[in-house]
Each structure stands twice: as structure tokens, then as C-alpha cells.
Length: 112
Length: 113
Image (cartoon, rainbow over all chains, first blue to last red; front, side):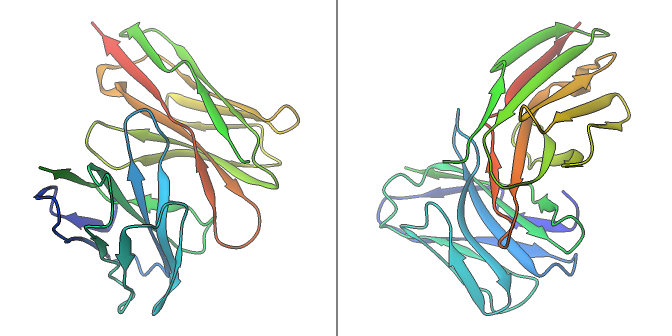
């Protein structure tokens, strides 16, 4: 899991509630990413940020929002607009060497 | 559309045996190919990374091969151990800005006694 932490490990949410997933890294990486993993599917990119105060939508950004106010932190908010939010969420960061992405331990979100 | 396909979807082998996992991709332009190991409920961990000019890369009992002409890669695991039980994910990076990755769905490997 390197120097990337995600919290909480498990999260339960009622329908209609927004929740925020935390991602912190101490690797001094400029770029950070959020992915969603569902059974039988490859990881899908939600949002990414290549530098502080800047971020771009990935392939499945609808119903999600992010911020990048600090280099170390890239929180993801799952809003009530996300129709099927139950999934395993992975945060990653990358530096300049091969652009290799290092992943956090993940947060499993369950909507009740 | 960029795609990465892996086979088999799942595999069960006895401890000590070898196995080979396959990955075919259509990502273009190609930058590099990585194999990740993901334990259940954890984040993926990188095993190998290969660029266009590399056709083999080893990491302990893991050996990856790449044929950029046929757009195929394999991951060979030698003398399997119980701790090798995990999902193995092939990931291809597209050349150019943004570090865009295309993920395979993974091969679920189970090593039994």
C-alpha cells in the first residue's frame, strides 16, 4: 500500500446521503486518482488530478465530486446523485518515474 | 476503444505447481504494460512493468513476457505458494499525457494444498 492511506476501510450510507472518502499520500506525488472497482469489471477512473487545485473527470464522474487543495490529499465525495454507489473505491498516486501508480488499501462503500 | 482482455477468468492450482496467465490488449498508442497483484479487499500492488522494447521481466517467482507485435503478455508464476492466491490484473498505459490506464478484469488465482 506504500505511503497512501484511505479511510475509512468500510463505510455504510443511507440512500440520499452524501459521503466523503479520504485519501492521503506522503510520497510527494503530483498526480492522484480515484477508481471504482465492481465485481467482474476492471477498475474504472472516476476523477484524477495532476497538480494541486486542478482535476479532471474520468470515465465515470457523474455523481461524484473531488477537491485538491493540498498535494497530499484528494478526497472523493459520493453524492446522492450517484445511482449505484455500492462498490470498492481505490485511490492511487503517481510520480515521475514510469508514471507508475501506487494504490491505497481501498474503501468499501455500501449503501443501505 | 482501448481494451484489455485476460484469461482465464479464474484458475485453481496445487501448491508447488506453475501457471501462466494471459493478457491481450488493443491499447494504442502503447506506452507500457504492468501486472498487478491484488489480494482480496486490498489495493493492487505492482509486480512488473514493461515498455515496448522489453520482452521479459522477472520479479522473484513472477516472470512477465511481452510481445508488442501481437499485443500479448503473459505472467508466469513458478512454484506457486498459498500466498499467491489473489487476483492478477493486467494494466496497459496509453502513450501521451494524462497517464491513462486501461485495466483488465483480472484472473482470480487460488492455490490449494
